[in-house]
Image 1 (cartoon, rainbow, N blue to C red):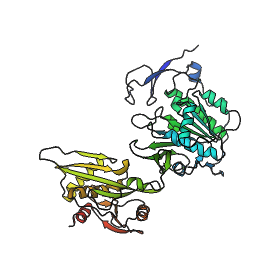
Image 2: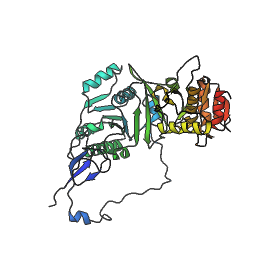
Image 3: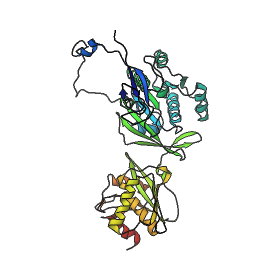
Length: 454
C-alpha cells in the first residue's frame, strides 16, 4: 500500500515544496509554509493512461443561440453599476477590501433590499454571531428585512441546510477565510481549505442558479489573502477601496466575466451606513470663491463615468545646500519626477532648490496619464504663485520631448466639466471641444508661457 507523503504549501502564493524552510523561495514571504498531506501515489496511478475510461462529453456549436443571463437588481444603483448592471444568477462574486472599510455593511444593505423585494436571501457569517448581525442591521435601519442569517463555518453543514427547499437567490459568505471543509485536513484560512471550501460553494451556486458572494480578507499589500487560484475560480472580483480617514468608498471591478472591468460605484460612509453618491465629483472638488495658486482641476474617467478631481501642488524654497524633498499623495512619485525633469529640461524652470508636495484632494488615487498636464500646471502655478482660473479644467499627456499628447474620450470628460459649471478647458492641440471653450497647447512650454503671462 502506498504511503502518503507530506508536503509544505505556501499560504501566500500556493507554492509547494518537499521540505520546510523559513522563507518561501517563490514569493519571499517568511513563515508561510504549512505542512499538508499529499494524496497517495502508486505505480498504477503514475502510469495510467487517461485517454480512455471516462464519459463522453457532449460538444456543441459555437454559433448556437444563447439567451442573455438574468440579472438580479440589488436596489443599490452604484453596486449594480460596478458589477455590470446587476448580479447574474449562478455566478460567484468575490469582494475584498481593508478591514473596517464597509464590506459587510454594503452586502447587508444589498441583501436587505433584495429580501424586501420578495427574494430569498441567506447571509452566513463566520466571523460574527447572529445577534451581532442583527444589531448591525438594526443600526442601519434594516431590522425588519426578511433576511435569513446564521453563524456557521462548516461548509458541509451550510450546504446540507440549503439543500432543502428552494435555493436562495443570493448567498453571502462572510468570509471565505473562516470556512472549513472536512474533506481535507488543515485549519481554516489555509490555502487548501480556502480552495476546497470555495470550490464546494461555487459548485452549489452553479447547480442551483444562486448568486454566491464571498467576502475575502486582504493582505498588507492589498491583495486578497489565500491562493491566487481563488480569483480564477470566481466570475467577478470586486475591490472595495478607500481611506478610513475619508468619507468616500469606491467599489471597483477587477475581473468580470459578465461585464466590463472599468466601471466603479461610489459610496459615502455615514451614520446610517453606506449611501450612494450620485455626483462623485462633489467629493473631490474644493468649492472656493477665489483662485488659489497651486491647484488645477482634472477630468478623469472611470469606465464610462467622468469624475472631476482637484490636484494640489505646493513648493517651498530651501536654503542653499539642503536636499529638496519630493512627496506625492494619490499620484505616482516616479511620474512626478518625470514631469519635474521635463519642466526643467524643456521649459527652463528650476526646481532644484525647492521642495515639491503634490496631493490629489479627497484621497483619490490617480493613474490616468492624461493628468500630466494638470499636474504640470499645478506645479508651475505653485512655483510662480500665479493662480489658474477657477473655471478651467486641464488634461493632456506629456511626452519626454515636452509635447502634449491627445487624450481618449475628451468630449465625454468635458461634457461633465460643462455640466458642473466650468467654462474653459486647456487641452492638447488639434482637439475640437463641443461643449466648452478650449485653449490648445502643442507643447509644455506653451502652457508655461500662458500661465506666466509671457
